[in-house]
Amino acid sequence: MLGKDFQIHNLILPWSPNPQKWEKPPIGFIKVNMDAVVCNNKYGFGVIIRDCDGFVCGSCAGYKGDLPSTEWVEINALVEGISMARSFNFDHVIFESDCASIVNHLRKYHVDITILGHRIVEIRGMIDLFVEAE
Image (cartoon, rainbow, N blue to C red; front, side, top):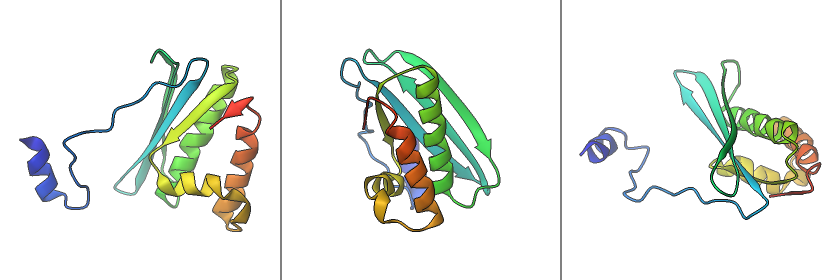
């Protein structure tokens, strides 16, 4: 089985037999999923927007080769997702990321005085422009 072989060779990433399933947003909301990838000091990201029926409303992917960390790539993906949702005039949005660090920064954005924290404050301002956002 490929999963077990991969797990043996890649001890950093544990293998889970039950991958997490995407959940539809509530009726009237759209969900913006973002993710980042790092490979050979090159950074990429992807964004997908789906409605309450799971229909893909939009998506994008990009490459950022000059960013200092995965967190910054995740932030770029979030900004792209916010921009896409605004351009489609969505008002009720759920943003979803697997980057716990960024999620935690967004939840306590008013206490972070780092450069990353400053960018998070700007992003919170962008998110606050939606009628309802999580």
